[in-house]
Length: 234
Image (cartoon, rainbow, N blue to C red):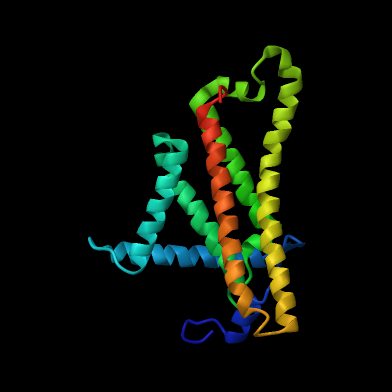
């Protein structure tokens, strides 16, 4: 190390590392590293915007204010006024997933969401979150959401509702992973067949697809929260 900077060879080896060995076990690492990169970029942008806030927004501030305002209006329209307290969380989920998706379009980078470990962790977070919100809101009565409208139907509805709720994180994780992973594979194939002409035209298409996948994850998270808040009668 010279002048406080890591040796170029060591840095290159670190960036190219796909796995690390922890306690004798080989663990995939690349998606974690790129997740950290995405978080570092977002935190840096937020810090810069915080330092340069102006009364009359312009440039990047104007873009993010318009984005957050659009998300807030959408959430409040869908969930009602109670949804306003979840705008920051939902907006953060959308921006974070969108940022990770976009990393797959940058040469030399990989989308962390093209790895199942990333999408499963986020889906489990959503699953735990909306159930905690429902239990805090309804206490013991939250269990009525799993029993159906009639006591006679409880033996049938309870296992069905349990399976339905357990399928939510599975659906969330596999949908995001499958679409992003598929786009990555298609882009690699196009790049092999036609390095320039094969990749540039589909960038716009994949940008739309990555945006839609982030929006779908955000929207389903919002609907799950809405269902937990509204309670069993809905």
